[in-house]
Length: 290
Ligand code: ZN
Image 1: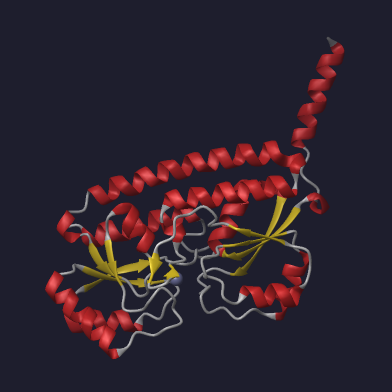
Image 2 (image 1 turned 30 degrees about the vertical axis):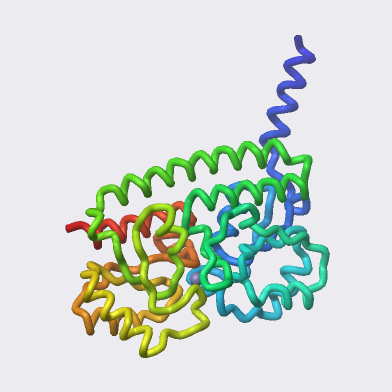
């Protein structure tokens, strides 16, 4: 009995001892949303570094020299894929190192626009669950000794995401069907639109790299008038001037700022993915309420 108590005590102590810094898995994530997923699954067993930080634009990122040393030191490099990080292959090559590349969208059904995939798959919470499962599997493979901890943390987080998906559906159900159409800056909400039934029209394409032409803008303005679109939205990663101009020309109100491709910093209102989705749905529902 005494021996059993002692071994139980030993187990409890082992669980309470923090993971030593040198035992943590070094993970680099290409942008802030992926880093948040890795933190949720990895907890204190991972050290996560983000390349494109809060409010940054992952489409047009120029890697800094320090990024190459971050990648060189990483065990795992978590990327979105679907063409989002065009700058990454060159960075990974120049960094050298042994990092395993983990494509978080593996298994997601892509939306194809023209002949290229739309990379913004995280805007559907059900896709985010696929990202999290891929990240969990990669962490387990890289550190099998922590498999049980990763699985438990992933399960808890996946359950929160399942709840979040229902929250989004319940919120959209409150918006009159005729008002479920909005304008945003670039085409980042295709997966959200498909999953939840709000139509998004954007003057810029799926990348922020290409600017909207005068003709694109004229087409959007006539669409807004014809479809009686109730609101236009800014994005945290994009220049606000285009949307402000469209709002001024059409008299349609600016409904707020949507977070498309990045979280905010710690002091912003959306430092996590769950915060970001809640922020977006609050912004949409308050602007689209009659
Ligand atoms: Zn984007």
